Length: 286
Ligand code: OGA
Ligand code: MN
Image (tube, protein in one colour):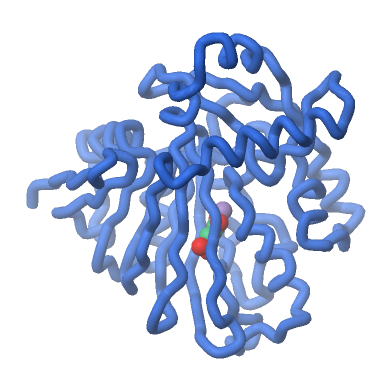
């Protein structure tokens, strides 16, 4: 089967045809997928019937899988590299409004880059849709390379070199979640990343920011926070977006080093939504 790539009209976001992810890929195909990811930021495979093992095997081509933290894991989840994304609890029931994990997951409604609070952070995330509501909520993506290149050279020069603090506490504070274990606090101290990076495969400059980013190191807190808010607002304008309309069987793959994404609301007390998340990390600290 030959693999074909169908980019979106804007070129940000693409669908890949001709791959059955239950079959192992080879290094030639892997390079084509990296190229597609580099060119389009987000790629989607339709009609896949993957197991966790298939999904993990795909992730391992891109890099070492990240161990997921306990706060987001369902007790029924036995694979350390996976999160359950959606609204189903450890007993397979729709999570009650006050469920702790429901609150935690609500931080996904803010534009973010997965695991930017780690060092090294996540690079590529895969998300596979196992069960969806009839009218599934979209997941939205923003193209941080194109947003960066839309700034004037003078503005770019002001921003280059700034270092940003990222932490899971910053993003969860936005939804009022503060219940972290001592063990988590020790394991996940705040980290620093540059605001502007060179995206490795394309060589294009990109922002690196999102909901885990709290402030600019060396600046007054409020001033840094305001700058980050302004930049996220700028970079996530509709003209920089790809909106993913989910279908059951979709496997979505995105590059966290040059994109932001967010979930959108749905009636989560009525419909089930179950997706499986597995990501890999950058090979080096950034
Ligand atoms: C994620 C995420 C968005 C969604 O799984 O990392 O942000 O729409 N999900 O569930
Ligand atoms: Mn996410």
